[in-house]
Image (tube, rainbow, N blue to C red; front, side, top):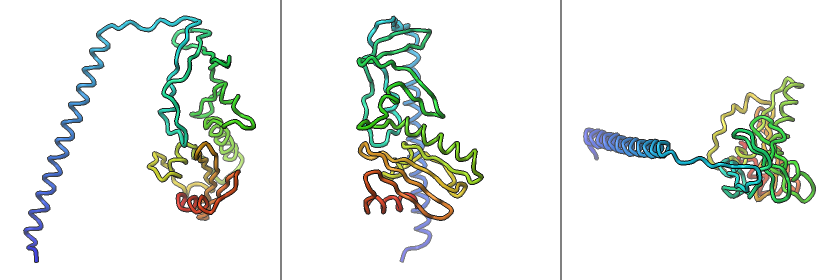
Length: 223
């Protein structure tokens, strides 16, 4: 038998050690933040010359999508080269090697559709996540304007994370919606999940056919 007083002392010592450990971690974090701030200040004071671009220059474009939760897709950090066709302030029009202009054709919610997103819509072409996310968000928005029962849309970034059983930043109350639609990208293949939270039902749609394994996975990830 173990004396309760001994258990209490051991418990208090464990708590004290955890507090000390947190203080040490906090000190390391604050020191790292200070170093980064000092490095940034030195770089700004150094007066490094800003790049001087002009029409006709070849440039690389940072791939912002590679920093997002791009379900089932790995992309390069930079894309290009592109040729600058027009300059205005900090904005530039770019053209790729296939003569496709790099311009935003539309912005639907948080999704930006570029020229090549539309050019990739067709048989034997991989549909861009921005295009399908924008399309489904429009459908849900239209549904909510015309129907009293609310619907929600989970984009491919969040839904693919849920499908892969990874942590997601999605914050949604499922019971507040009659139906929730989510799109999953797995190995460059799109699948649709339709969830009925109030009825505790899910519908799994795969254009290549619903396998038993994926149907079971749908039930497990949407329960």
